[in-house]
Amino acid sequence: MKFDILRDRLLEGLNDVMKAVSSKTTIPILTGIKIDVTDEGIRLTGSDADITIQTFIPVEEDGQQIIHITETGSIVVQARMFNEIVRKLPTNEVEIQVTTGFQTHIRSGKSEFHLIGSDATEYPLLPELTEDQKFTIPADLLKSIIRETVFAVATSESRPVLTGVNWQIKNETLICVATDSHRLARRKVQLENLPEVEHSVVIPGKSLNELNKVLEDSTNLVQIVMTSQQVLFKTGEVLFFSRLLEGNYPDTSRLIPEEYQTNLTINGKSLLQAIDRASLVARGDRNNVVRFEILDNQAVEVSSNSPEIGKVQEEILVESLEGENLKISFSAKYMMEALKAIDGQEVVIQFTGAMRPFILRSVHDDAILQLILPVRTY
Image (tube, rainbow, N blue to C red; front, side, top):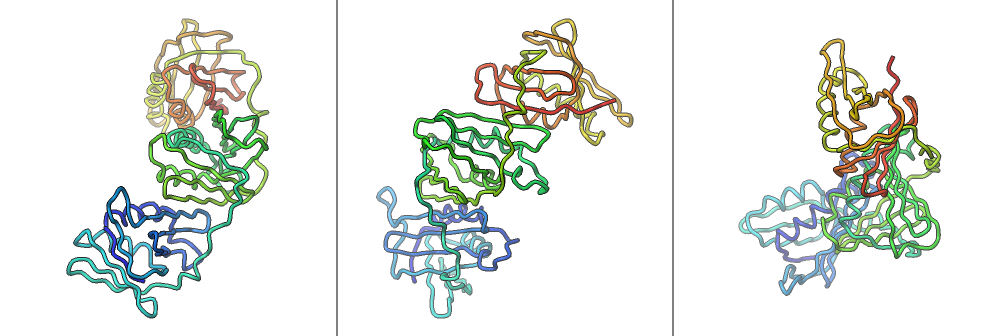
């Protein structure tokens, strides 16, 4: 095979597919990138067996010729090395040629590299997906859903299914839930084009984090195709496949209290900053625990103490308060991440007692819900 390509455009494609390539893979060929050259353009594929990213570079884009193809074909080249070489080539014109024995020649200006490639037929094939469960969602909304849920997935592999986000389609609503059993993040979205059949899958948190890096912050539609073992996100010329996690996701709806003893509305930004300050002292403590007390004078006190460091306390006025006073302790990290996910000015916090899970939601929007389990302090 042989073709010429503009280096900038090749690098753009490599940036996407490199996100799926891992040096820790047990399948040696997956440390490489597969390059398929057809008359229409070039397809680049990177994979670590869990995530596969494929991007297409057409011969012509917006009236500009990007690739000049002399001979079609396929090759697998060492991903990290190929990426570094392309990045450092002296000119924007690159010629790539594969000769016998998978010898790959990369020429640019007066620079010439010779890489040993691998047989592309040994590279795993992409999964074949039937498109029965498919819908579209704007890219910026998808990015928000990921940001508002993925931080709450479990990091330990003791219950693998909790390291993913549960996506459920039910009554024209997409419900995304993440929990590590100490906290929970839920986001609901009403979408018009959802499949009518109820469907539930668990997408690895790691896959969603990588997808977030590939997505552009725009209102362009992303097409999502779900099967029992794979999910595919199609955006522009990029295909992003992820395997799904096996196992039954726990029914989390039971964890969310039906009624509350105390409801308070508070400025989310002020509370986040106060907890951030209190956590400076709390950091010395293994659990990074902050105490939260509702006072009689329409205020709350955020405090923390550590025997080695000292203590801090701060009062914040609340905007409205109904119900009983209470004292409660929680992880500063969990509370700060929940407040960042809501990202609104006004937050409603609902308590059912000092040792029961409590809920945070935005005043303006019921779609985002965060639940946190308190910490026992004696």
